[in-house]
Image (cartoon, rainbow, N blue to C red; front, side, top):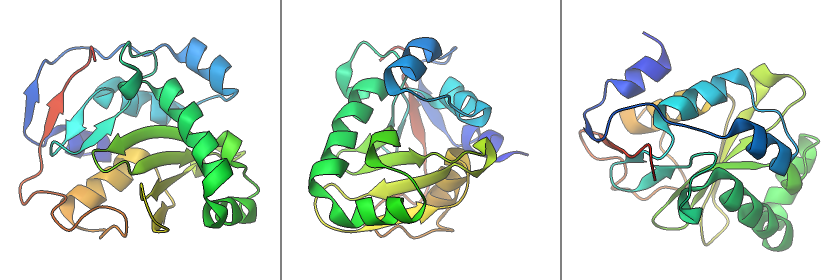
Length: 176
């Protein structure tokens, strides 16, 4: 099974159905082209909330708090203005905060980003604590990162000790 299929196999509640993402508008607004694997991930999990804590955003969500574009623009500004250590980490990769894509966030204001690369197969995941200096950098896809965090294979410096639950689950919300 793929990591995406393994994630989808966790217990789920909520409304099943297709997740509609407005890729054209999101790519234009964020001046990027998303890797196909990320589009597949958001097509499966856009709007979902894992363990009642980590929300995955959706491109084109009517709710600004769940919208990929709105959250990305706000988070980019935050990284540019207040996070010297993140700017330095990104600079080592040849990336600016204005290129980050905020794909999710937590109830504690933690932010989950895609870090672009010229090679779409090499985009990374960066998770930044809402308040403080901690961050995680994962070289791989969003679904691989999320799966490993939920299974306990990765212990995040960002997420609280009680995340994930002993038996992780998620709530589908494709229309948020």
